[in-house]
Amino acid sequence: MKAIGLVVIMLGLTMALEGQQFLITIFSLTRGGVIGERITIEGKLNERGIWLERRMKQTGAAKWQRGL
Figure: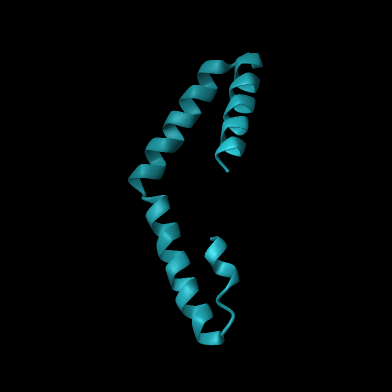
């Protein structure tokens, strides 16, 4: 999985450097990161996954959500 992440980063950097509006790309990524941290997107996704796991254990179909 780490290799896929590195490839995506390299692809993104290559495409960003080819673009004519490089500063807008950097600003958008920074702004998105700050907003995501402020509204704790990761925590909310984790909570939703835990909720889904508990719900699926009740129905007996709890194997697939481990991938979340």
